[in-house]
Amino acid sequence: MENQNPSFYEELKGRGVSRRDFLKFCTTMAAFLGLEASGVGQIVKAFETKPRLPVIWFHFQECTCCSESFIRASHPIVADIVLNKISLDYQETLMAASGTAAEDAYKAVMAKYPGEYIVMVEGSIPTENEAYCCIGGRSALQILEEAVKNCKAVVAWGNCASAGCVQAASPNPTGAKPVHKVISGKPVINVQGCPPIADVMAGVVVHLLTFDRIPQLDGLGRPQAFYSRRVHDTCYRRANFDAGLFVESFDDEGAKRGYCLYKMGCKGPVTYNSCGIIKWNDGVSYPIQSGHPCIGCSEEGFWDNGPFYQHLPGVAGFGIETTADKIGVGLGIATAVGIAGHAIVTNIRKRKEIINEPEEGSKVETTKEL
Amino acid sequence: MRNRSVPLREVHVWEMPVRVYHWVNALCVTTLCITGYIIGDPPALMKGSEAYFNYWFGTVRFIHFVSAFLFFFNFIFRTYWGFTGNEFSRWYNFIPLKRCQWKEMLDVIKVDVLQVTNKKIDSIGHNSLASFIYFITFLIFLLQCLTGFGMYAAMSNAFLPKLFAWIVPFLGGDMNVRQIHHILMWGFILFAFVHIYLVFYHDYIERRGVTSSMIGGWKFIEEDVIERHDQKTDECPKD
Figure 1 (cartoon, rainbow over the protein chains, first blue to last red):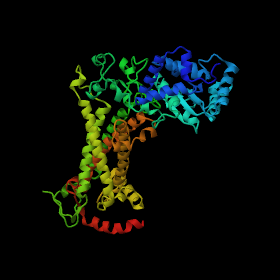
Figure 2: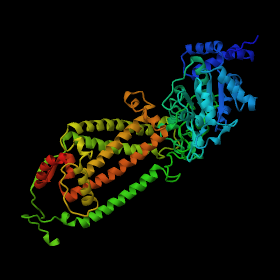
Figure 3: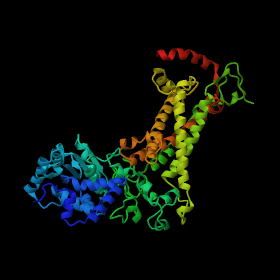
Figure 4: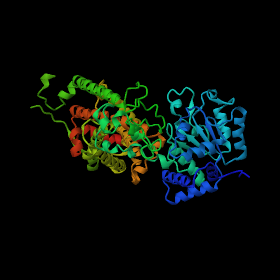
């Protein structure tokens, strides 16, 4: 008598989750998503009535840190839902099936839920030579293209799937590309970060399920609910920045007092993420709170905009330690030398003009000097 | 006493709006470069204090943003004046579309930069090379406004900065935008070096009063140059 297509709530109830815990989860999610109070009811209703979301979760060129992050979500229900329920269909790291059985699992989802299932991708896709990433004898690109054809939407987990991350860093030997650059015609949600914050990942899933549509995205395809503000603008150390109180080295008095890490290379001012608000590991801390500068992991090309402990990025082609300022000072000196040289040459070559050529009919008293 | 008498005529070259633009721009650029450099590489002025008692870095940034708005509107105004001002301030001086402008550029390089000949450059306003360089600086102005307001947009709800928000995703994120903004700052600094030197140079060599012309607006131009100029304006467009 088992329901063929149970809702999330039914599944949760079956697993012994109390109504109270369920409501706590829905409220937390509504808060993370920035919904108004009535949003809680919408989430509850969606979880009670809608059948679970069919999901295929692929791992391509990546380190699985997105999955690792996910299972550390602040509310256990999140991980439970997604890893035990949603991802039951196909998730290379966590599924029990292997070989043909595994292949059959995701093919079954594609056949059973055309236009309904969500493709979630961890990792970038090699394009230089597709053989760099093959699963079951087929390349990542082939697998993805096939899966995406009839999907509802694509969720790109983490920097690899959203921007290529370390694999796409110069010189990018595998020609790694993010999901949105290799597929077209389907909405792609870039859930940025290396890894993304677990609660952000959960929030995206909850949004998809509750509202049945793509969350509002920013210019780089990231959900605005989580990526519309800079880490810097939401940082608890921001007051130190405005006061001009900076950590000058990791072992100085400023570091001890919790000054701003701007001069230690903090990429907070150029990074959009929720680290300062939601934080990590159930709101325990985030890099800056632990005294380490932000490395900008939710931004495109953050590996190439290093070094991590230098405020200004190195300039390509001039060596890793060369900043725009060093080049600028060099050019400034070159210009000053050029100006001095030009001024000397002017006084030699334009002597006649400077001393003044006598014009016809005019008398110049210093003719002798000529 | 050394003196000479050369037939000169006073020409009103820079109208009041152009002069005001120039000095407002000079002030803004100087302020923006100094505050911008401090923002990029803040000096360790404070130690052992609490954030509650200070706001100097916030003030530096505030000055930077206010100057940026002034710079932007001043630039817009100058662009407008390029279509309504006198012949020396018009847009066509800055964009070398005519062959005679390219020819003059070569002459300027020979006469003033390489100093291989002693020919006189006839231009009364900017010479063609200077105008072209100014055109490039205008493009840098534009890029600096785009990148600057692009970064500002994320922390503002105002209408104007929001118009520039697209530049951030276009360049792939704040990191690149900020890097470009920072590199272009050096363009302004190097330009200022050369610009000020060349004002001295031209005043010294040509003695047309180029330095004071940006204060009073008048230049002292040789009669024969004006005669050739009057003929040239008829000639050049056909070129």
